[in-house]
Image (cartoon, rainbow, N blue to C red; front, side, top):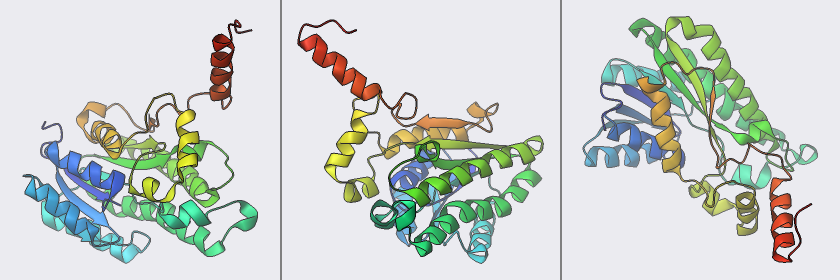
Length: 276
């Protein structure tokens, strides 16, 4: 407890799932938290934090709109006087991404544009308006919730994957451009997480295929992401910048054929045949 004592954290996309878990964990570790969300669900998350003895205030904003971002950052400064950590967590992850974000030939241009606006433009705008305050106060940490989709081609989620490539590079540019001003920037690289969006929109057969290719025996939870985020937000990671911290059950760490070879070897051993 107390690893973030005295820090002020502005997190967007915190109305549910990973963002809500991170906001709650930040508060448990002593931070004051501005809970941002496009919907008013931020109010419920902030109220829960306060009910458990934490300090949090909600703010509703569409981060693709610069005026709303400017107002959110101003609210954080007016509320707490500083911003030590900006956590860009907001992203398009609902039914639109799960069901309509398909292959290139089937791409809906409006969905593509909205995905880029929320997933890439939004984090840029939040950084644009938060970093000057961080520089004036002597430094800060920018955390981006990324995705293993940025590292791989797939049969769907084309817009989402492309947006995560862009926002990862944005994070590295922030680290490069403002490191000497005391600003660190890192990607919280997440894989499949058992959050609301996953449980509601991912068919069980798809979920089972994903689990088969993980190196753990379980699918991670938002709390797993939150504990890693605390490290990136805290001074414990003061020498860590421009990096990816994977919270993905090892999904992106191995050859794509690993699960098939593992099953083949297990079958051979069960049949009394030594592996080749």
